[in-house]
Image (cartoon, rainbow, N blue to C red; front, side):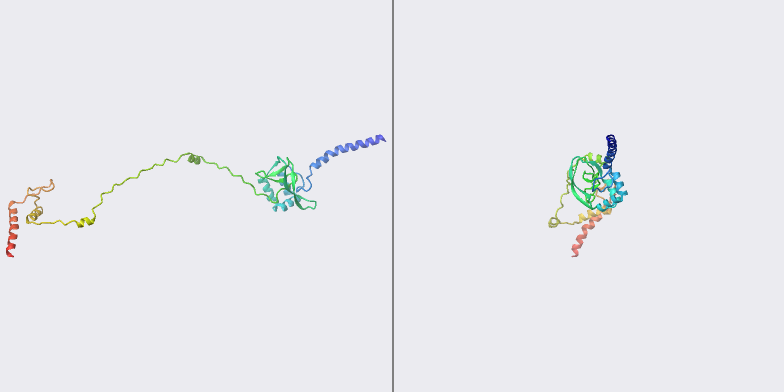
Length: 249
């Protein structure tokens, strides 16, 4: 009898030894209660695959965020990355209660927990269960691209501007002012006295003689002299004419 009991105990021990690892492995493969996911995931690709292919998971995320599964997976692929928390912290997490409704609570997330974060390090989802930490997906943070300066722009910035040359003003000397018209008009008129001899001398150039010597104002042109008899006749006419006019009066 004792041998029989020993045999039963040995069989049970062997069964326990073989069952416990598989049970522990099965426990590890399960997600915590209240999870949005049905199966555990280890990266973003597995998360997106489950959201697209599992109807229950797809319906939960679509109802929570108000977006289609394609929009949610596109956002996750383009704007988040997976890290492990460097220190523990309290975060708001949404979960599925025992009645299948969505609820939220503040939960202490221990250090080392895998989470999805934005570019600035803000956690948005607990990767152990897929539970979101925001009611709606935050706007993606776009990093400012560094401005790459071309060589031409660098040369223009490094080249100092040319010195400014100050040109002194040029003083223009104006001609002396003309005499006012009032002074010209107020000056006394000059008297002009006409005499027969003056008139005769003025007519001599017109008759062909430049002067008594026969030279013209220009040294190159020589005008021929008038005969002495013509000059004597003209002088006599000019002297006799006034005498005859006085006698008639």
